[in-house]
Length: 280
Ligand SMILES: [Zn+2]
Image (cartoon, helix red, strand yellow):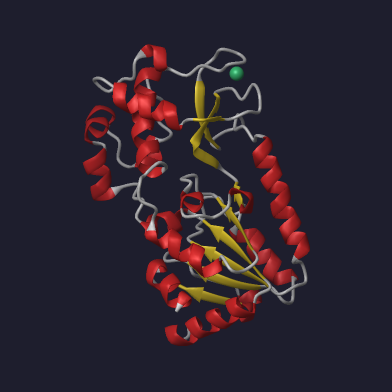
């Protein structure tokens, strides 16, 4: 890789000249912004769950099959509150917003923590492909509606006793009466509601509009959990469109393939200071 100062200047220039910016964000962005899924803060925030269920990190915990609904929602209430309804907007997301807000832009993300919206990104410019911690759905996906859970989460937190929410607060599907679940893509029951389809269309329309134009793909923290959603399509777009340029910011996987190397600028540096440097 070239010297940081050179890559940074290139990236700045590319962003300044861009007709539009497409942000593609993965887990690495939220981790860099301070939402931790393991380690010390996990130990501190979930001690009784770690003791009872032997959780090692939040990611695997979120796939855990709880013995009762009362226990399940006591855990999720904590997680949703901390990683979705956290009171302080995250500084890194704020910096990112300031970097692009005066431009034409759109965001596609696999993150489900709602942090883009929290710092001011308008919801109509966001495509949240994998769901949202703030939404519930029917466990069996019997109908394609989702349900905003903020008030419920607050009640769960307030009324949890001995690691269980009261039975009368266990959410049930208003259509089929079965249990509810988080609106997160983990299996074929994932509900894509009306808003989801609307945003998918807007994403497509944005791509159409800027095809063949001076579009910059700003990819941040996208690894290989679900590369077919952002990483591979972005590489494809760069390959097939003469004017499209990729800025890849990735601590773990900064690699860019030979075919598109002359149209990509890659950064393995710390995301937070890098976004700050870009804004100067
Ligand atoms: Zn149902």
